[in-house]
Each structure stands twice: as structure tokens, then as C-alpha cells.
Length: 394
Image 1: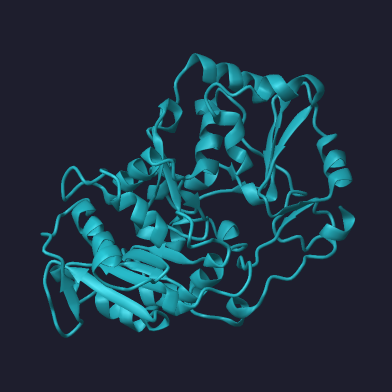
Image 2 (image 1 turned 90 degrees about the vertical axis):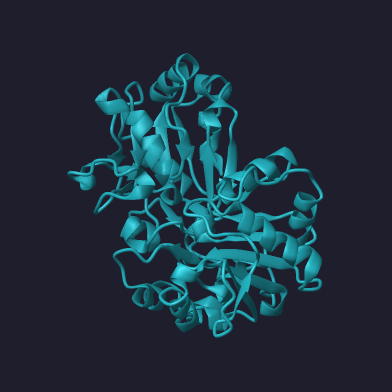
């Protein structure tokens, strides 16, 4: 996504564009822009000053994905909705570039880039806060909007057949009674091929005992055993493997649409991308709770390498990120997968999504979450339509 460009270490982005520009405008690939109207909107702001402009989002309650920032009043801190587009004035861009060259990024983990960029720019009050711009929109219902966002579920051809998707649910004996029934009451019926992998074989579910003891944190041993089983011991030539936790809620029908945009013969590792140490040569990884999607070719290359868990309780998602990075296989991000619950995200942000997954049952009703956000709908079956109006004006 284009937002990463400015913040890569050693980047010459500022030097390349700042001499002949007043603004740098960032957007998503599906953002629609009325360019003349956008330019007119930006003219309201003095380009000699530091400006950070965008559509403002805020947390209603403190959330783990933002490290519980502003826990006393999370609504006070505003950060941009990337889908609406956001802008930096050149003086501010130059200051950020200079700062990046003189001091290392402080955060080890990159979880929600839009929030972390806003924190970095604000710099504990030393930099500007986000200035909300009402013309930067995602719904495009108002005539004054200069941007809008195409929010249809991705579809690049016929949806992948559910028989081509194998679903592996990671569980353990202590969660058989409370979590597995929720899986079966919600999304499991959408899956043609599903198995439950545990530390205990229970025929009533049934679960498969992989011979890996349960661990309180990190499930690398279990995950690699699932990958080995998928590739070498069963499941024929099934193209895709999805690994989820027993407290993950997922829409298989929407996943079928999304996977139509990827080639299973290529090494694909897909989900919600997090980062570790990206400012100092670290790596990206797919966070496990939102669901990890593998093409068969990705698994073949992974298991054909020497990369393995350093312990059974190592963090599986981070180890996989390191392994695929060493193989030169990029992790592929989709914002439709979610490591947290719906309440952990701003309502305005989710309003322009067709989500594929959420994670965690803590302090929420998972059945209600599934019905509200993930249950199959008519929209899931519809092909995206061209958004006329904005596109006609480009």
C-alpha cells in the first residue's frame, strides 16, 4: 500500500518530490478521487505550515491493538482513515524525514499503521494532531465529498470452490466444551473440509491429536504439524489451507471470493499483516488470530526449507513470518481479516468493509458478532459494481 513509502528507512521520497510539490497525498488502491475538487480543498490550508489532514477516526474504548493508548479517554486522539486518503504538507514531510534520519523508530511492533503514524506525527504534542477534513470521505453519499472508497468484496473471477479450501481449527482439550460448539453453530457449516486439531482425541467432535502437547503461549509446534499433515499425509491436491484459532469467527463464503484474486500455484501467505522491528530490518508476519491462509505451493516451499520452530511454544505466526521472509516470499495483507473483536475497531472504519474474520470471545457474544458481521448475505454473492459518478469524473 502506498502509505508505507514515506516511512521506509533511507527513503528518498521527500527529496524526490518536495521541491516541486506542496502536498503529498496518500490513498488506498480503491480510493476514488475527484482531483480538481481535492486540489480546491487543499488550497484552504497554508502550505508553509505543518498540516496533517484526513478523515478522523477515534477509539470508543481503549484497545489492545493500540496498546491501550489514551486509556482514560481514547476518543481524544484522532487518526486517519487511509481509505479516504490523507495528506501531509511538504514542510511537515521534510521535518518527519529529518527526524527519521536522526532517531530510530521506538515501537517494536507494527499493528495498526494508521494509528501508529498519527502517534509518530503527533510526537507527544510536539507535532501536529490530525486535522479532520469533511471532504475526505469513504461513503461518498454527500455532494461535497472529494474522495470515496470502493467497499465491495473483492472478486476477480469465479469464487474459489469450497472443496478447494481446507480449514484447520487449532484447539485444546480445555476449550472443547465452550469454543468448539460456537464454531459449529456459526461458520463451520460453510466449510466443505474441516478438521479440529487438539492435544486430545475426542471422537464426539471429532478432534485429531497431533502428538504435540498444549502450550499456554505460542503454538509453533502444533502449526507446523498441521502444515506437515496437510502437505504430506492427507488432503490430496487441495489448493488452499486456512488455519484458525478455536475462538476465530470467519466467513468461508467471503474467503472464497477473496481467493479468486490469487493464484494457488504461486506461494501465497495471506491474512492481516503485522510487523516486528520494521524500522531496524525486521520482518512482517500474518497474525494468527485473524486466520492464516496458505497456498499449497507456499507450504511446499516452507517445508522444503530448513526453517522450523525453535520450540513448540514459539509464536507460530512470527516464526512463519521469519521463515517466509528468509525464502523471499512476501506476506500478503488484507484488511478484511481482524485479530481483534469488532468493538476494538472504530465503527466508521468497519462501515466500509465486508469483513472476513474477527477474533476473541472475551467480553462479547460471539453468536451475535457472527450474525451481525459475518453471516452470509446477498452482498456476499454479488459481483462488485462499478462506482459510477466518481469514476466518470476522473
